Length: 551
Image (cartoon, rainbow, N blue to C red; front, side):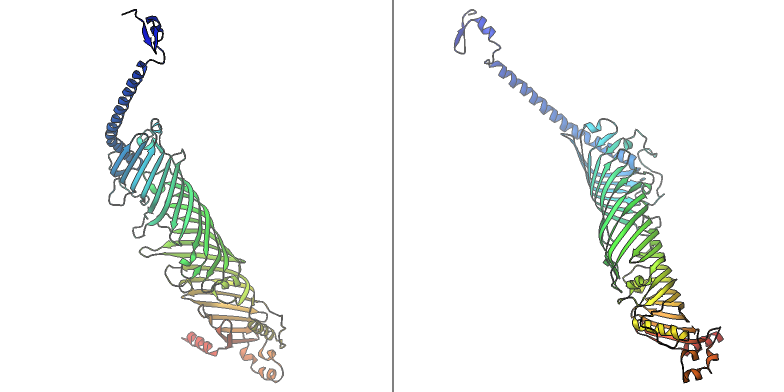
């Protein structure tokens, strides 16, 4: 009945009271409503999930085509892509494998970019507005093959042959971060006979800088001498028409490089510097430091430091030094030249022009001989330096061709000093023995050539007060053997170099040995080794020379 009392929560009430209490929290009808709403929401979520699943299946081919088109426009290359998968929820995630970009459609040369596997992660919002931002790209097993400068044919691609316009796919995408492991950079030379230059990059990170280029950090494995090069800098913008012209700049450090890799030398090298230019043509300014450098034939350690300005051909690793300044002990060497490979042959040949205007002969000898240097003095040096590759010892394969001048030379051996001092005194007509501390300074200059471990001297001049010695001959590095011959011209006559009866009888022969205003001119020879040289008259070579002149 309409007006009968109702019972609510155990209490009796009228219909009017029930109406006033209808919205109270104890009613069970609203709970049913929430269940209905949640059910509807669940159906919507299931429907959206189904739509996303169907959408992903539908969008994958479209996204793949867009990515291929973007890479064709960006790198002016024909694109091969073996696999491509995309997930759009909760973030966009792409995975792919077998990516290859053939420069300007050419399949007769290695692809300019080949990637074994790649993945892409980014948010949806970054792709809604131009320029579209891709947050993170990870690459594994990438190989970059940079073709020779100017090489390429007219592109034969599905896209336009011209460079992408400002609103094309290629120019509207910015990759914020690229990380790559195991990268091989191969720059092919212009000369077909030269081997390409390989750079093994164990790790590479690149970040967009907002100027169509990228900041990078990389670790390169340097093969010769073995060591890791840490470098960072700026790369780009990418030159689609001529990849080798893509600009690059940065700085590097190179530590703990073992020079023992090379035959005949040893030491641990470190280097740092800056570079700029293009991928196939870089200018490098830097320094090197080898605290324990030594040539094994001498095995004396010296602290070798250099500063250099160099042009590096990235296509083959050839380096042109313009110049290098080397410092060790009290000697400074200035060198210019090249480190170049020979087509068809392994290794590189070092060819330098070396000049020393501030040097010490003992510093140079310290590198070559095992014992203490036999001579000290200031040296001025000019020589051509050629060191070919190969397993031979440096002393056996090094080629030198030049001249030197030594001022205020002093011999370190007391035996040789005594003989030089006696020679000087007697050449001036002083028959008294030299004092213990006389140590007369001498001058030396000569042309020389080092080949196959033997130094050949031409016009070796040695002078002390009262005497001038001119010699030709050889000095063998291995064994330090001397074979020199020539003549000595002395101020005094033979009879003036002695006294008593000997002086009286020698006056009779003085005219036979006086020549060109000199009191005495005698043919001599120097043999033996540097420590224990043997001096004597050498009429044999004089006769051979006269016979040769007669012919």
